[in-house]
Length: 175
Length: 303
Image (cartoon, rainbow over all chains, first blue to last red):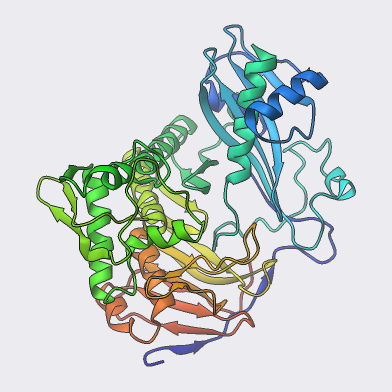
């Protein structure tokens, strides 16, 4: 092809072979997400567990499976709610927060963490357990230099479905 | 309870992907406010140019513009003008009226209240009139998908710069733009090994877009539609373009992917540079004469 010249490129692995971890980006922790979504408003933890009946109602309303009946939620005095959830794609795990106003409308959606993995099964509980209990203050070893990647691999479909599920959950169980 | 930092990065689901906004500034409130403005700009582009939203300019065009001209936001008109220019410059190899093909292939939902697109419809049926109006000679479906994403990235950067930041970057699912006093290293995903990246370019004022048939949720779709003959699922190479704006970079990835031999003049004319990477990691480079806000990364360093 006229004008094109050969180019040598040296690849870099996103996953260091000696670690069982994945390429990840941390944006916000839970408290930061709450203050981004509702600046200056005090929130208190408000954990909720859906009953089987509520779970079925949410699945029917949102058209999405409820994989976990436990909700990580926070509530403000005026009734505003923030829910933190995580969704799994084929190669990625996304933790995000949804801010819901007292009237039930969405104030915003912020991503807390994004993790991708190609060598390991993201749905494997053993793989996921290595992240359990880790706060954003104790980051997993990762290649922090690689932060601008061109080339899309994911759609936000799962997050969008998750938001739909959370809105249905709010309507059915959190008002 | 915000942490004391003058550099922040946030991400939201928008434009069909995850969009990441990063900025550096004198104080945290300045940076956070600028990032908020960036997201507002992204949402505005999405609202106006989304194929799915019934109230978008695009949907209003589909429903009405074949009957009478429809007035749209100047941004929408600009993106359509670029789409038409590209179609003209590539003799239709790039054609934004592939919406009909995508709907037929099940890749896009058929919009409501819209007549079936005329099978012989092309980009030439999209007429741009003065006063920010659009007219369709016959019913066609326009999909601005990728180039609207590139345009959104540009608008977000402009909004953040207005907010007084000293550096910023936007990455919308791989379409990205950087404005920074220090060059930022940008890597491209290896088309054959998704767990590898190829550090490719250092950018301080420019955009990078990559178009590639990465396996998505369904496993097979190539992501590029050849208007001449339906989905182009053959090659799995990745195409990356560097340009001064993300709108340009994104649009040109399609052109290079569809016609790599014929596009060299157009890229030169637009001051854009391109790299094609095969699944085995071998690569080709189309250099540019004009100096842009980027340079290829030296390949002896890592990370």
